[in-house]
Length: 382
Length: 201
Image (cartoon, rainbow over all chains, first blue to last red):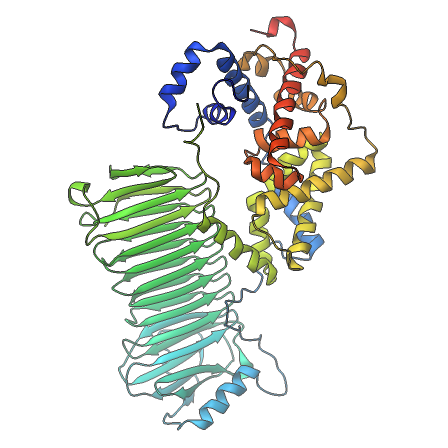
């Protein structure tokens, strides 16, 4: 069985219906060799028996028991801390401000405070219902704004060119705008954090934002600048950004209109949906079980990398796209809805998309997808 | 005829993804360990089910395996690849479980002679229609020693590479291949003895 005929590893692969480049040669041998055919039959029987004995039910109850023993949460609600980023501590009715607030205020004292922060109650809410407090400051133009909350929802939009305005709704917490450097501002909340309610922020067009929230949702509307967003379970939604760095544990990440910059998205279980992606945009998505949907144009200067463990990857390629697609997976399937040209079909499947779908790679984009069990689907997109 | 067309093991990027997940577990993210659990629980439980021969014992050992894995990861254990590492913990847990139950697992020698010659193949459909598959397999696996059974399950059910099986069991690759070869012969002999003549094609 071991060496006399077809190698056992090859017969095992045949029994599992894996594709083999020398299948025809093996089949011809099997037709003439009863011993090898017999061995293959046994291996198939063995595979069927093990497959019939697999039980995938009841794992939730097992997890509950494990979570109890390790004192880990049964749901994906553990605080997620991105490297180098500290979450704001929950609001305390304490004697003073949080460490973050103290640092920010100290920084604000060092630099020239050229803003006037006005706090008004019940005025200029920007359409936010239940508004309780507003802070506003004059600025010179596009800024970089940093905001931390624990569980409040955050919406940031482009507003007037020389004003930054913060409106808090459904909460008694009062916001403060603090200048921390040239063109840099922090939004602070009394007590150090905002654990409930909603925040609406207006910044000058082309501004950049840096938002961290544990469970709140983050919505960024047509800012035109770059965004850095960290959430634990909150969803992230953004429109018209030049660049995005987003990290989320279980929150979904949805971006529409990403043009010319770079997007780096990391999630554990959150799905990622990137639409209207520009031809020269660089996108890197890393997820454990979250799925990636990418729709756009991939051409010269485009680089798309997607690495998932079990998350499926769907790529909707615009008709004008020209790119080389490389797909490597342990067990994930590959569905080619574009009838791409095959460049190679080994462990790393390589396909070419583009006019004529032949030839080599000058001036084309690069798509690299790696999964453990996640599938890759190529289809015609926008 | 060689197996040069066989797919390789996980690539560097996949391993890097696993390392990122491990690092998150080390940092104390409950969600990350839940992801480890979700990705590997079916394989670990299946392995333990075949080793212990009982669903309830396998569930108990599965919990213990993941609790130990969590403690090890939080304690900074060096892990190159999660699957063989977890299966190694599972195997140790199963051995302790069986010792605790004082069950006799040394049955292999009684059938080793009978399994030393090639056995005529069966019709898989006849086999599966004639007996409830998991019960048939459990009885056949129960005729193998714990070590041999572990090696066969890791190969036939978990589809592990010989090198990974060697890692799990602490053997060299030559011994892994040899034990799996003998395990298969024994398993087939045990399957044949379970069937009525009419069920053999």
